[in-house]
Length: 117
Image 1: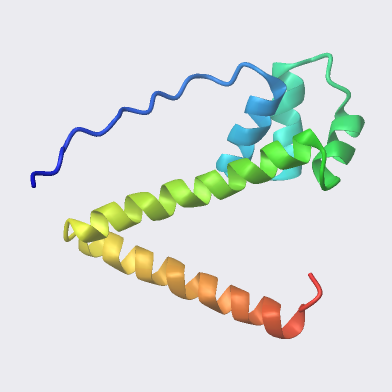
Image 2 (image 1 turned 180 degrees about the vertical axis):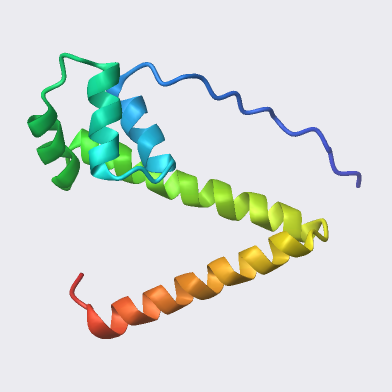
């Protein structure tokens, strides 16, 4: 059975809403302060201190959008490294291995020293 090599193109557009901006900032690993600057610049009517409290409070739409972006950003990087490693790119193999090792160490440290979080 022949595999279809056509892959759907994912078109990314410029963020148009505040939640899209927050997701994109998370994807880019912007700090909360950087995210606030971008959000207020993009949407001048935004109350900076109120948005900051929403970004830091679990369960809000703003918090969820930002955190989702962080996860998606990590996925994009790991996925690209995996694809490169599969095609024999030695840099990608090394970077993927380092990323996986770093994540395992971070998890072990968190599990051993900060089990409640």
